[in-house]
Figure 1: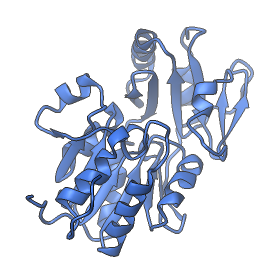
Figure 2: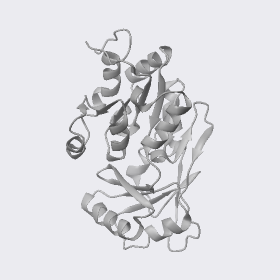
Figure 3: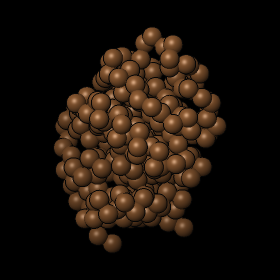
Length: 276
């Protein structure tokens, strides 16, 4: 089987990509990433999750990992040193939330140590196997400090999120850009922030280029990352609309099939690994 040449770094999203549908890292995936480390590859995880949440997950790989979190607003080294940090100004967030928000929509502000939300959402809580990044219920009408790492909205009705997206961009397009990490999850970041920009910072620090990286993703917050990598790979479980937006990129197996690890085993590692 033809191997990928000149790849020095492996970059992966978490949910829907490296993690299985139960939001866990499989034993097989762990073994493949340990072999990547043994063979000298740089490993970067790039996620929309908050760093406190994501760190507990990537620790289970038991290898050094650079962490790009909150869609690029934070970078942490393998020893958990903060290398880059960016927060949205309070006034920018307050202006973004100054629209009519459907009561079915969960609103979340990512803060440094807690996530502030207008309602308890069991589905969002289930994304954390161990609750290391804690929710705090707040009334946004009485909140003083709106400064945040990013703004996050969740709703089972995608069209309600689309309507909200249009309302917010009508007021704040000069400051913010958006991404649907899932059809049910809408996120807003500063215009200067995305996964690709922060991944490039990590690679430059290690003496590599984006052309020497292979990246894996399944959401619209992965578009830039997938587009600028030497090889971008879309998960089989990604929305059809993402595959249509990036028609030149290869689609691999789903996260339920350990698609990332199986691709790495067959196309990148120097020795064959069982894929059964």
